[in-house]
Length: 405
Image (tube, rainbow, N blue to C red):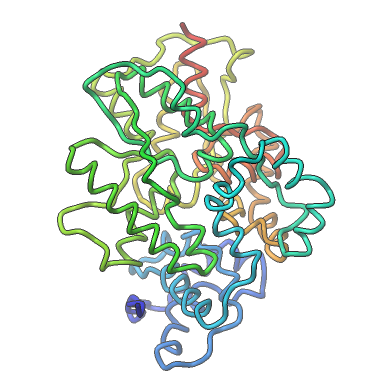
């Protein structure tokens, strides 16, 4: 199906997007979002060849956040990449990075220790480096059991209050503990958490790596499942800001023909949902401070780019600051540089590290022993660049609530 590109003519060439683009600041090889996005779109409409630096766009959305005219610059770039990749299929490296969920399913019967040895040993890292996945990049380790597998074995309260959780690939495959922490907190608020097997990857890694049709197939499945729960009147949430952005903004823009009249594709932010639970009296937060040797009383928080792009505030930061005695500073130091799979690529790794350098420096200099952020790959990158652990806000909340008992 031919892509319906947004109209580039709303661009007034103010270059605000260029100033805010972290990649344009890190490398002169990238012409910048204005030239690659709305400016070059006019040449694409004339059927001219693609500009070579398109692949440097990290899809971090900072151009969209900055644009005073509301031009969907990142979408123009992703659609151009899709057209480019239809003409010339992306390399195997990009297929691997774009299909993490499928890779995990193919390897599901292999023990985690064996998978991690196979993926993280020097010989494999050397081979992956030759394939184009940087040997220096912080590859996450597979969990012993996925989040969905572990969830089936835990007790949840019998209640008439239900919430559906879209877990996202990173949480399900690599970080199930964060998912279990979120379920635990929701249980404290009186909710039984449902995680449907029918939900699949949101498709963002596929889009970013040029596999547009694969992302469309996933979108079709996810929208159908979302409609099911909308009809039931049960809220659907996610703790991943990239998944939330893909559902709320990207799917309607990329695949308008899949949209169902009257059915919103927006997923509720898990942290915002918990704050609502607090306001309604469903979730009671501790009223006393806890021992800082058990749970850090000082944190530095990083707001993921894809969270800021939604324009819904920083509910994770607000949630952490609602804990008595908890001192949380906002790093406010820009993009971490990982941008999903972008920073894992050999030629993009040094760019990602340069982009994230201000953030790493802020985290290192902070007196806080631990950082916090909602995005899984942001947390991996922050630990890699700063040396400090980085937790999801709900994991901090659970530790705090348990310590305060």
